[in-house]
Image (cartoon, rainbow, N blue to C red; front, side, top):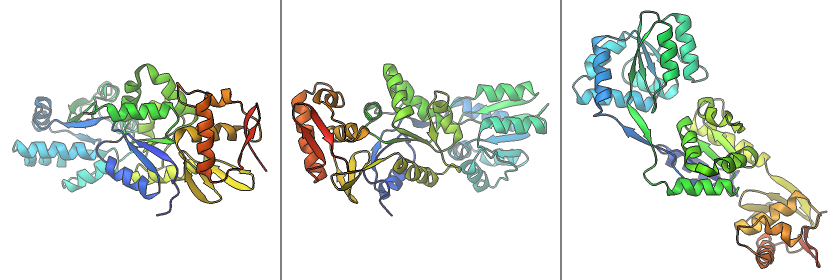
Length: 362
C-alpha cells in the first residue's frame, strides 16, 4: 500500500469493526486513535425479543424489514436457542423481504431467505416510502430494529394501515471505558486529529452527547478543520443536521470510507515554497522536499500558524495563543527551536529581532 495518509491522524469511533477499519487506515500510513463511541449489547435472552418472535409466529408477517446483518443473524441465533428457528424461518419465507443494505441482504440470503427489494440510499425513510406506495393497509410488518427504536417509521406505517411488530435484537450502550472517547473529544477540539470516522448515526450522536458542555467547541472543529467521514448518508444525518460538512462514499463499505479519506485529506493540506524547500503541511507532520518530518503538537501548531500568512512576521504573543494553555513566551522559543530541528531545514523559519518569527517564503 502507498502511504497517502502518512502524517495524518484519524479517529475511529466504531466498536465492532474498529480493528478492521484501523488496519485499513494504518496500511495507508495514518496514525489511528481508537475511541469506540458505543458498544452493542445483544438481547438473546431479552423478554421483548422473545415476545416479538412469538408475535411473528402467531401472526406471520406479510413484510419483513431487515435493517442490519448483525441484527438478523442475532435474531435467528436467539430463535435457535429457543427451538424456534425453523418455525420462524418458515413464516419469514412467505414474507415480502426488504433488506435496508448489503449486510442485511447477506444475512437474509445466508439464512436461506429471499430478499425482494433494497433502497438505493439504505435509509429507513426510503423503505417506508416504498412500502406505502406498494400498499400496507391490513398487513403485518416485522421491523427488525437496529439498536434503537424507530418511532417515526413505525408511526408512518401504522398511519398507512399496517400492524408493526418491532423486533429489538440488540441495543446500543455507552462504551465500557469512556476514557478513549473523551480523549478523542479533546483531540478533535484541539485540532490534533485530521479526521474522525463514523460507521453509525448512533456513534455520531454518542460522541456529541459525551462532549457535554464542549459540544459547540467540538462542532466548530468538525465544521472548520477536522474532516467528518461517514460510511453513508444515514450515518451522516446527525452531523449534517448540525451544519457539519460530511465526506461519505457512494457505497457504504469500510474500504470505500477509507478511499474517501485518502481522497479528501491531501486536498486539505497547505503547500508552499520556503527558503528553497517545498513544504506540505499534514496533520502531525510536514513533508519537506518529499520527506516526511513528524512534529510534536507545539512545533506543528507554530508551523501551521506561520503558514497561514507566509512571509508575515508573527509575534511571540500571537504564536503563544496557538500553544496549549499554560505556556509562556519561553515555550514559543522552545517550539520554534524544535520546529527547526524537526524540519531539518533551519533557514525556513526566520527570527526577526524584537518582532517575532516568519516563514521565509520564496
